[in-house]
Image (cartoon, rainbow, N blue to C red; front, side, top):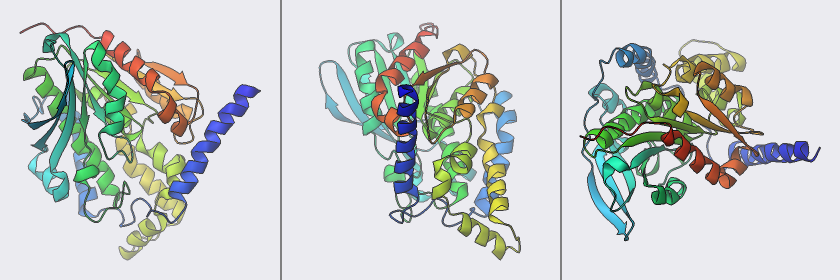
Length: 360
């Protein structure tokens, strides 16, 4: 009985936080400027071409990135550097990005006095609203003692890459969500390839929380060599977040319907939601290939998550036989705050399930 009440409390906290963030007028809703017009058509076309291109190896190796680094601080045991590089996305995708998003930024926390072939590095991807490096560096920082480096990628549309007219994390168009995801995949793959071929790390991984976990799943799925894939508090698709979870209360459904009306398309709000489901089904990770090492895929999910229902996590585990789900007690918000040790344990265990790369 106590466990049930505690679980309900976590769930209620998620909804109180969601009501404050998404039902008040403090911030604008998601997609207040509509679907995205020609950009949405472009992203839908590119998404449908994604699997043949990656599965057949047409897009490997990815464009090489060459970050320009500056040292933030350095101690006897570790060094934190920040780097910038031009996004490796192709010309068509780069042109679709806002100018502010075309320069990628990363923070890189690396153990010192350890040869790279005896270290692992994990690329940490941003969850919704994570505009800075700080939270992800706090998550990865203690892992330096276990010779695990942390590379934090600033997402397109976030932080210093945020478009001028966008407030906070509230993407202006539906196409921005797909564009953010596709650019994150391309940049992450190029970074992992750089860590492998240029820096010579012995193992690689990719992790992320919430939206970042969806992107981590996609990167792990599409990468041609084994990487530890670690999605935390993550759904199998953006459909779950925006059409089923709390974020549906923060979505500009009326604006989306009105844009369709200007195109002589009359829809009820329910039909608009169905169209959104169809568009966001492109993000359904259960349709992606099984990663090369599914046993190095560890999902960490919350028992009483108001944003991500249990069935969503289990769908992805079912689609990727050999993967593991670990449950933490809590909701989305409380687990984000209280369970970093469990996330770190999953990172260590996922990397342990990979073989060390043969030295050059």
